[in-house]
Image 1 (cartoon, one colour):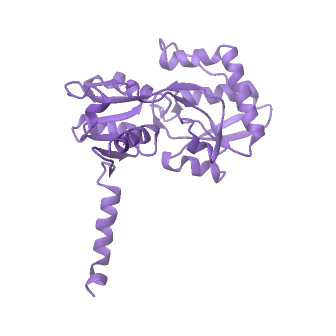
Image 2 (tube, one colour):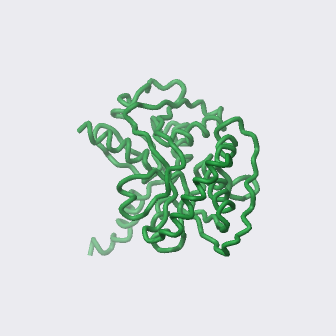
Image 3 (cartoon, one colour):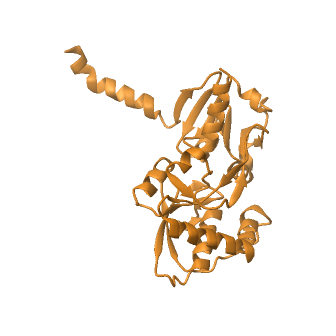
Length: 269
């Protein structure tokens, strides 16, 4: 009787513990705590508010946040033990025709200079460049999944439209090869499942090419190189990866930053 009476209350406490109260889910990983968030900006905001000691995330995303939020008083640095990463456009393993189409488009825009113009817009001097609209001569529209909380790669601008390096890149490939794209905002945790369920046709969302992901999807040729950065407050004593021992570190759930710091903590057991 006691169990039946209090089962609903116990379930509430269980869900509260799993979901957390807006601060992400925790996981003990050896001599440190990994605090997981739905997106990287949430983790960085919690760092600013003092709820965690550091954030590990892709270097361009961390640097973009620091640039756009100088009042946050954050700094960031890398560590040679973080491996180089390469982003790729993910597709279903059986979609060879689409895979070839995307790779050819990527090759062409790198060759004709369009890639460099897009890169410069987001990571160079900021000179504006508008990607040409596709004529869709192939008569095909592909749904492209993106987690649009990952500036400067994909985000929602002030006009409520998708914007970012990845957005421009896939639009440029589409214009070059003659197909159309529909960008679909998709939560990161569900982004590969959406592809496998054919809710989307490809993913371009600053996704690192990994052996684990290649078991379920196929990637285009790499289109961007990055690594992980550690973000901390300006006055933090944390100066290296080793200084994260015993600290609470925020990450976006299921990202390469999550894997990197979790594996590091596990290696210290």
